Image (cartoon, rainbow, N blue to C red):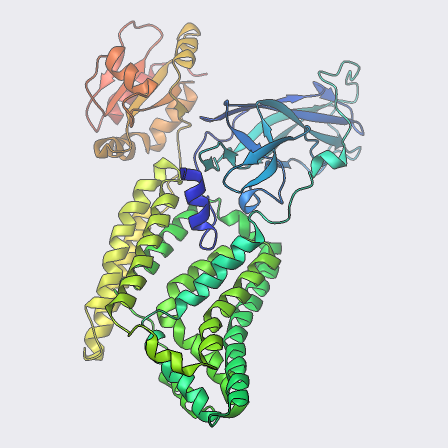
Length: 594
């Protein structure tokens, strides 16, 4: 089974896939897998006239964008979000004709875009322009978003925004368009595909298995025979009444999961219109939250901490009688299962927030049916109960094995995050795990209240402080560009200074250099003012172009190394230490401003 298929199947019920990194806010966007550029139909546009942008894509061979929002995992189809002043109105993008692609993971044919293609975004200029200016130049940005996939895996790069200037001039010459704008064909914009990303039968089987798994949790399995025998006893051994009470009890379990489905619908209706919840799973911040959530859920499965149902609720199950009592007992049985199944329920609920409402509601319903299934089977045949395996260590081992599954998914999502924040999330994950361990293992029921509060407040303080230090977003003051020998040579030919920062993800000293030198405002401002080309040479992998250049061109044994190429000097200026900001400033200040 290939990596992509494994990831899709593991995350089907638990979490959506999600993100990789690319350069942002450029007229030309370049990532490892795609190059995106922008052209305008006319150099200048008259007020009241129409024009368009042509967005050109050049995808690496074997990679594609999803064409349809219905079939793309998590709605990660190719999409655009143009923004500009109010007097520029944008029409819906005109996409090219998509092509069929058989996805082995989903086992169905999808519509995709691959190779080199253009997407057109028409726009119109209003006649109601601000001020009395004869000529207006307006900034327009176009955000590009979507999953880029190959046969093996998918990434959702932060493609950022294309930027361009629209020139508005009453006497603009609009007789020579730079390209032909195709007619929009609605049937090509929304290819007909199946409404579900996965076969419905597979979703329902997995949902039932998840529900059945709740019954073999340590919280439920030991009391399952007791519940069934109590139903039989209340029915006074009448087979018909026993069956009816068993069915009503199962209905109570299903009712609990219907309530969860209703809660999911309420959240989706609210967040779907305000926050577009499905898109949150593509954001690095939210993805980091999911990694940490899965870590905490895994610790819960390992028994590091527990969640208990209040005694006032659990005790009510002892008083239930008759059909209404059986319904209430079923509902409470589902609630009582949550201390052990909380981790699975939380993951399913997070997954459901990014899915179609019908699919997510059906999943909750069938999870309830799966949990109720053993009661429906065993209640009419209570004698079978004596043949069930006895409660024991195997149940706890099953629960803990699910914790490793959560960790596996967390690691997968972690390595889908941008490399520049991945390390911070990993460090914080270790500290968070320590704090959760403090919370759950340093105290018990016999611990004095004062000591219990002191320990847990300390754990919270440590976690919050670590989060502030490690997870606070750090402003990117310098617009680092990916190492490219051609760009460096072009800058040299133009007598433009080049600053090359050789670094690696595993290099702690490199991170110190970033904080002591390149995080300084004065250094960043000088790099911008002096028109220096900043290059980030990532040597994380031994076969990368930057690694080869470090050894073969600059003859350096390792990182960190910072190199400044000056137009009037043949030999580069080199720094191997961690604190050279003042020396770098001296060189930069001598350069002419752009």
